[in-house]
Image 1 (spheres, rainbow, N blue to C red):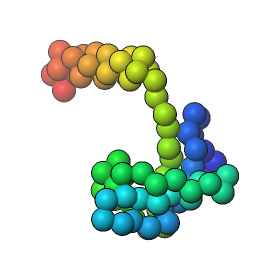
Image 2 (image 1 turned 180 degrees about the vertical axis):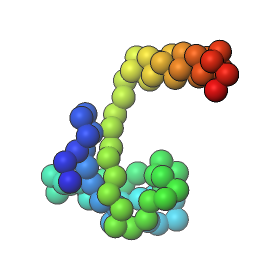
Image 3 (image 1 turned 135 degrees about the vertical axis):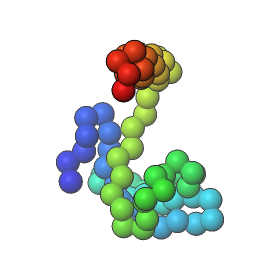
Image 4 (image 1 turned 45 degrees about the vertical axis):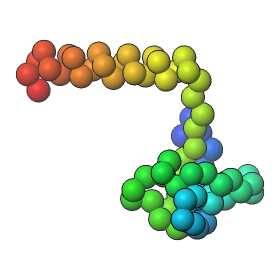
Length: 76
């Protein structure tokens, strides 16, 4: 499956008590805290991993806040 822009695709190989083992399309394997995975994810699920800078996160928070405010003002 093609990856989303600025992400890398992988497949969850397995879960342990507190971690998820993900095999990336480039053949590497990463182990991440289980709480970072979606509740709907299970072994065999495809996932997309991304890394955001603090500045990117701040911009996204601002964008979402503006969107929510606009929806509230429109009565949605």
